[in-house]
Length: 440
Image (cartoon, rainbow, N blue to C red; front, side, top):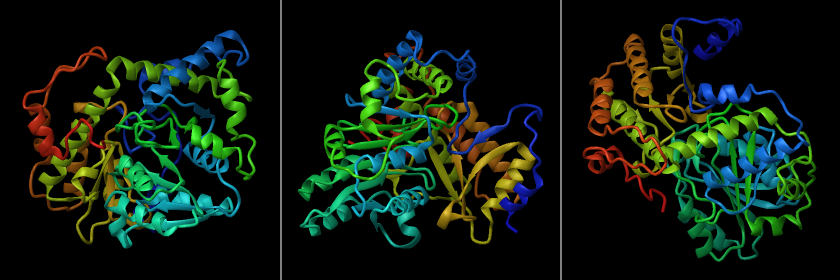
């Protein structure tokens, strides 16, 4: 029995259990929900056909478009990100359609499995073995495959923007360029479930046809609502799609959304939370949100390097601002390290999934996270690694502290306030990549 299985068997659910301090939920989603969002979700439920709800609907639909950086419709479902995956496929595909899906990790593999169950014919493209899970999408491979598809049998290219299982963020603009260079009409579908509101994402500018996302990551909400962003091309293709759909159908939702309503009962209280989350993001400023995530991620990577451990993602340009995967030395079970940290320091870390099970753990630094949150998280990791007998080369917490100190700046109090840190440009370059236009 593995350490994670032992942990599951040993825990008796007690939702009223309150140890001292707070539980550190440092998995890469669901992320911690801020108190002000929890308070918003607790508001009394209102009539989802009344005027107050219409105003709420119009507000969140306008606000979420700004986060996706789109002028196109954003469909909001009362579902998890998995539901939004299905909506993207069922609204655009017909049974037997070929789809090209790029393997960057566990969630890309799950999307492929869904395509198979829907009666599609997915082709999985990627680098062999574990190598493909340690690097971003190789756009040239997509271009070469599409050039070979002279009959245009491939109807969509599906890629994951920020792969939650690996800590790899891929260049979506490069994928769009590859499709265009091949002169291929396939739709571009992108999963940014863990990337949205944490990593820079530009639906319109990058030429994405359908974007899929969810509420429980950078938006700082509980799980339960998900999104499709739909281009005019995707809407036109959808008119000819024959896969069965009713709940997921775009046409009724988009039409009713024009006045702020849904064709069925929406998740009213989660929409209250979304409204509050959008206010928080706009108060900080979306670009400031991205810079905060990049800075925290760079500090986390500084800690991992100081420990002498390997970062799961091998490509500097693809390091995720959302999470960092930490590879364990040979012979060390990462799940046992996670279990020890959970039991001793009341902190949850992400497990290695699929090909990476037992080989790594994932540190989430997304959403409602700041310098001190990260330092506490790294402190728990460092103590847990010592207790697990992992030999560390240096003090990762000190390395992260130095990085955060050297790039410190006052907290932005409004979305137009951009206060540069001392030596920020050079420090962030050392941390991995330039912030502005990382994927342009």
